[in-house]
Amino acid sequence: MPIITRRLTAIGFRCEFLSRGRVSNLWARRGDEPPLLCLAGHTDVVPSGPLDEWHSDPFEPRQRDGRLYGRGAADMKGSLAAFVTAAECFVAARPAHRGSLAFLLTSDEEGDAVDGTVVVTDALRQRGERIDYCIVGEPTAVTALGDTIKNGRRGSLSGKLTVKGVQGHVAYPQLAKNPIHLVAPALAELAQTVWDEGNAFFPPTTWQVSNIHAGTGAGNVIPGRVDIDFNFRFGTASPPEDLRARVSALLDRHGLDYDLVWMLGARPFITDRGALIDASLAAIRAETGLDAELSTTGGTSDGRFIAEICPQVIEIGPVNATIHKVNECVDVAALTRLAAIYRRILEQLLPTDV
Image (cartoon, rainbow, N blue to C red):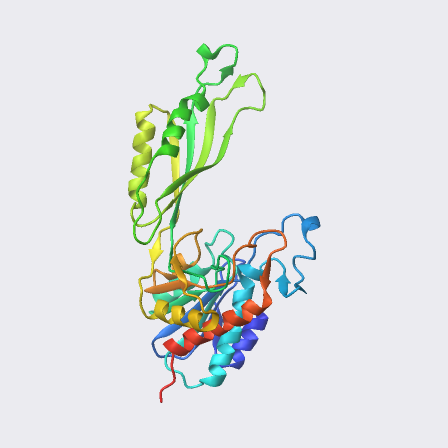
């Protein structure tokens, strides 16, 4: 992050690295008074995928036909560039603005997310540093910049299920117990279960199997166990404790011999209409003419950690159509408009005293 720290330092930010292990986390702040508005994002990216399918080196940015290509162009280095540009323009025009402005940048969002944003939020909590508003630069637009604001995210609950049987020869099934056959009815019921109807903020909870592993590799052996990975994406209508209990009750009802390990990856969070959303809607309308839709769809983000210490967290970023894909790209002109949207939000929430 040397380029970012140099540019932020030049406009009066105090930069510190709250790093852990091999992960670099930047906390940069300008000002000491409330309210504190934070711009948050990540510098790490997913793997490139097949290099021969890229039209240019994925780690060398290239402009073609008004678009910037490269891994991370949309998710989310484009937003980081827009953040910095917006801050520079804002500070140049309003050096005596009220409140404080901060950056929270990590290099551990696409991975395990255990040494990244959560490290910074823990440090801020311990020293009593409160964030009032936060904008995460995740790519949120569906078809055009400004069409969608994420004002929350669903939770993620994963399970690793092992169902036990008895290994044997396929020609003598009476001497074995096939765990795949045993678990199949339970999986069918889990797949057909309506977990909830959702609510005003979140769509209904979904349950999906992601991996199934069984067998020795031989075609004439009944496996002795089957391992199944599954995941819930849930909102506030079904607490994770209830989902865990319902799954266990269903498996017990089917008489299975099983082990089940749970992993709560994220709890859902939601931001109601307030100063941050109102300022963002107005800024988007002024720059694009669009009335943005509020949405909580998609995967998880680091907003889940920030929401624990900040009452208003939203996500605004470029179009997400190419994220994690080969030939990821972002519209260059849209990045300029995105920076203008961010700047307008800063002007509304951190105005200059007259």
